[in-house]
Image (cartoon, rainbow over all chains, first blue to last red; front, side, top):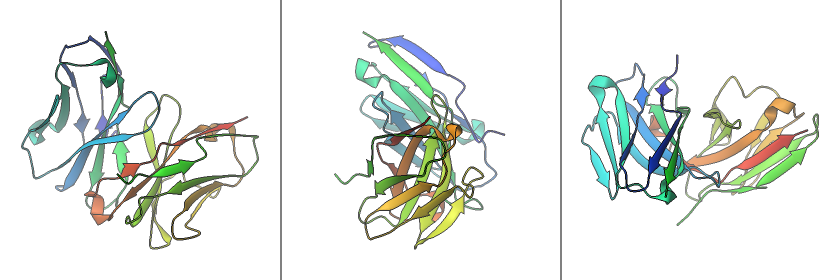
Length: 116
Length: 116
């Protein structure tokens, strides 16, 4: 079973539109950590945010916001007023505190294209 | 801002040849990781390394793979006899602590390996 599911393979939006990228995770641990990474066309993985399972407070950073809901095991990422530079593949990742150590489990990624 | 660096950025090799991928983790980090991403697919964990030994490895990390920290700064991944299916982007990552998943892993820019 997939630990992290990103059901949206590709999304295209027109510049200035808002877009939400979905992430659903699965874990038996009560303590875990969730991450979002951005992979621009150049290929590197850029860290965006980390969330621990005890903190369900939503977070906003500029045009980015994250909605963490334990009840639905989701950690969705919204970009407000999208820009062309937001075009990238976005990965959600899970790390569990117990049992399996430090490895990150990545979703399959959502490719976002922002059309000017 | 400190960052993880990787060399080379691209490597082309013949099947059966040995390759060594190099990484310089962030200087005060203690945990090191290798991940791979086959083209168009998700990022997969290979191995984590702490205190000069492997702390965790995945099923992908078979006897053809080895890791080493030959000096105080470099962290290497060796593929002893490359196969066509080893063609992928290989990411090195590091974190300050392992701390059972809670630490953010910072990724290098990747080495794109092509096995012919």
